[in-house]
Amino acid sequence: MNVTVTQLTDQLLASYARVGGINHLDGTNLPSKTAVCSITTDLLRLLFPGFFHEQLIHSSELKVETASLMDSVLGRLEDEIYKSLEYRPPEGMSKKELRPAARALTLEFLSNLPRIRELLQTDAEAAYKGDEVAIDIYKTCAEFLGRGLAVLIDVINPELIILGSIYGRAKSLIEPYMRKALEQEAISDSYKNCLIVSPGLSENIGDMAALALARESIIA
Image (cartoon, rainbow, N blue to C red; front, side):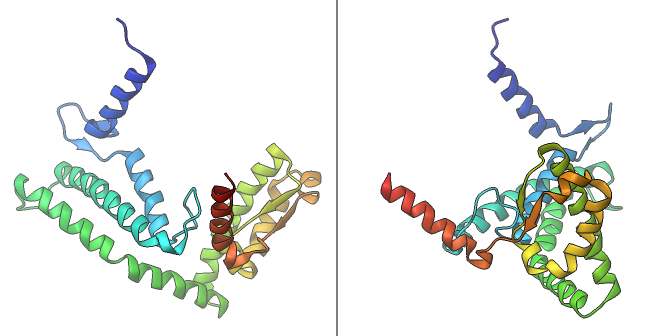
């Protein structure tokens, strides 16, 4: 059989989208774990624009990028919710009502993203005011950050790590717990020789990156 690796890969990827992450024998299709993880990552991009994107986004591109990402999340999240409803339909709901119900639930959830952003901002303000629950949220995040950096330091042994965005804005909330995790998890000598700082450009980093890209384009 004369089939290329590319063709095999394309066929398998198509099955992921069509069939989902797992199937019950003689049962309904369950939501895809891979799809849910991907949707979760994109939700973080919608909640924190510029923080979780692979490339820097300038404010002039924000509306187009957000609209495209929102449309993508809407369709994929609706599909996964539909699979859940199909697996265990609400009492009294017919099969033909499942898709509209999934659409309505998805739209309701996404419409709450602005409110979620406000709550997240409130958490930061509450943490600075000493709220124990809010501080515990930052503590947990900082500890995981420290553990992740410890792995990076142990494997790569860098001399410098620059942590941008949220770290720079909430350094006093994050750094103590991050440092404690690093002291516990990282190789001592490697950690002592690694400088961890926030970027010097701070909030101007996006503007400077856009200017640098424009300069490179002109020179090229």
